[in-house]
Image (cartoon, rainbow, N blue to C red; front, side, top):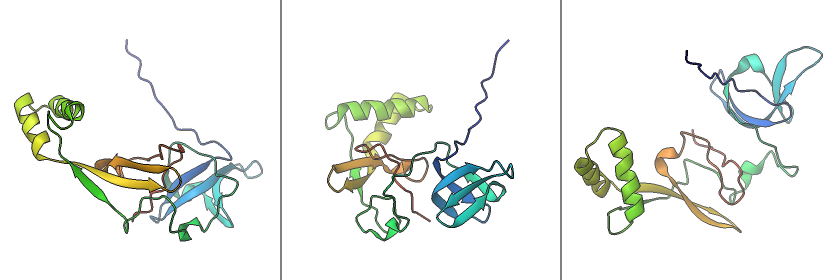
Length: 168
């Protein structure tokens, strides 16, 4: 007999989440509350309240909102965020000579997907790895595989904090 593990995400009261409302709006850093009086859960941010039944989906992992969080931090041009207006991508050519370990790992990934080794090697040499560049002022630069952008929550390697995704 095999057992299947079922994981159900549990929202934690007082933690912040990113929610997507049924009308398509995306709201970041909303706090989850479980109202004892009404028995109905909701999200809140500033003066806004978002009943749970209006939420289509939410991030799986909650986070603390810093004490000095500014609701209007989107006005800060130096904030670190994923934005449509700012996208700096570099192409990195990987060959057995230039970046041998990166080359080996990319080839192995394609082989796991079903390509023969020779074909996987041709693809890796001819298709540059696209890396999006970021710079956290006061800390330093880092790059993230461009394919990951918009597909999963991303984190600043210097702070461990989620990088807000402000793309449309």
